[in-house]
Image (cartoon, rainbow, N blue to C red):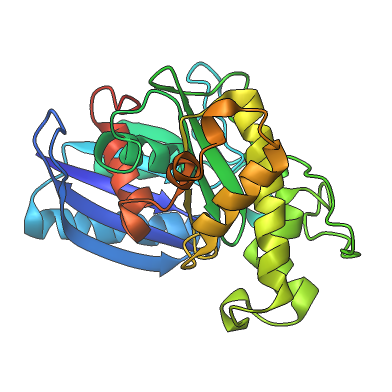
Length: 303
């Protein structure tokens, strides 16, 4: 079967068609992929619909549609705003309907969730969360967000987890006020790509390995992850995103998680266990797009 997949990000929409069997046991084959910039809702959704319909005519009509979207979003199926972006800092996208027009254009009912929940679903089915019942996928990039799998199911609740707005203890010599327009010095406000850029005056990828920025970045992530370990008891944290997948960062954060916990969680006292606790996504940059495929398949939330 052909599945249409959309990783709807705040900077770009990544569109794909994947060929998979209905069970989704094997890693799907991405037979089409294209990225477009996220501009206005009307322009972006219209262009995404056109591209996917044209690709479907060439490669096979999609039988299912999965969308992983930046948020916050409304996930309650019985709510009139299901499928909408809600209180996002991107003002043009506040209250924008994403799932409705995309589903209508393709003639399919969309499976819709957050972008990070989608990535968690993908990593749970085919990647670094495979075989685990409890884990977190967290992206560190333009923003910071997390998808939580607990007892084999994606966590939603009243809305969905917002791990990026957890407030870690401040690094002692950090006077930066924070980038988040809602909370200032939350994890996203202190450790996202834009926060790094605003604090140090250049893009994160331009900072050399020995720069003080990376000590601070690892410290904030480790303080947050130690909190997540105590609150959610995940077996693993999978860290993706443009900043999160920087070589060596996951290992550095793993070591500092142990320092933060100070032996409290015995199963993380062993250095080898810690190195298996914070890892990079096995699906790499395709975690979000393949995760959108996973959402559209039966039992997408299960490892």
